[in-house]
Amino acid sequence: MAKVLPLIFLLVVSVIGFSNGNDVGIYELRRGNFSIKLTNYGATILSLILPDKNGKWDDVVLSFPSVDDFRNDTTYFGNIVGRVANRIGGAQFGINGVFYKLTPNDGRNLLHGGKKGFGDVIWKVESYVKDSHITFTYDSFDGEQGFPGDLPVSVTYMFIETNKLGVKMQAKSLNKATPVNIAQHSYWNLDGHSSGDILSHKIKLFASSITPVDSELIPTGKIIPVAKTPFDFTTPREIGSQIKSAGGYDINYVVDDTGSEHLKKVAEVTGKKSGRKMELWSNQPGVQFYTGNQLKEVKGKDGAVYKQYAGLCLETQGFPDSVNHPNFPSQIVNPGESYEHVMVYRFTVDHSD
Image (cartoon, rainbow, N blue to C red; front, side):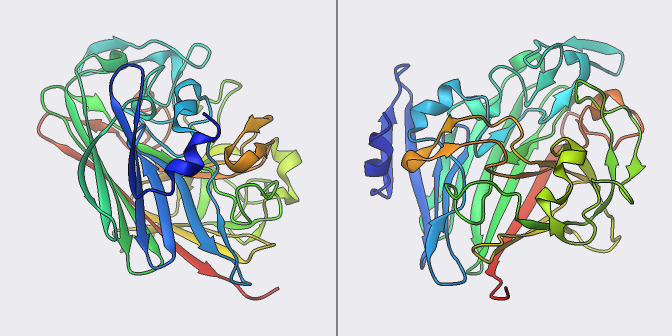
């Protein structure tokens, strides 16, 4: 399978038959030289091609040689994750006096929706215009991975202007109150997906606090300031500058509330070698900053081998385990209510040294 994907990528749309008979396609969005490849397996971003400060184009998203490799994946490369992204402590929660017990897949906890979350299902392609957008849909059923209620879900990837990518994740609860926290889980390396680690990337997070976690990465329920800690990126600095003191980054940041904008600015990231810059806005209260701590000799596309810190994730989201912390912003969507999660990426080049 490792040799199949590059050939398939030459086509605008192609279809791969999985052994269960369901069709998985690879789709390209292109505007000028701005190119994104996606698949309806997990509504996943497979690649994104950008120029560097010298005009060299490269892929800045980590992924596998073949879509088939996602079936046994534990990295969540580029996936849409849910019904509830991040962790639910003890894989259990209660809503309106009803107790729900889920099947754990991360020790005794639930991670990214369970053993077969949204990143592990085949989505329907609802709409596709090559130079504009693609919309994937999935009907999450009552009891799926233990979650209550029927929940139709859609994810749209769209071009906004010439250098912006929008992502809109929507869901509607049909018949039962349910937690919903859908996230986009791409790993970024702005110097190129096969260029090594992201420790020299400079990042600024528009977030003055974090939700600290216990030894199982479950939030304690507290919200603490990052000032004078290795987690402080309120002014730009290199990711590797204090990463050893932090033990690697895998923590939810509380995005600063400006009080006036529909979308809040979340982050700015610049690749030191390439000068590529990515800015991110979202309407969600948190963002999980993850530095690929668990990557270890992962066989990637184009012959790349991804080692620790090969990519970074910025997963805008509701707070982890909020269903078990009443002081956190609620993720409960009641029958007839809708959930909407919007992200906007802006890509530019910084020509300064």
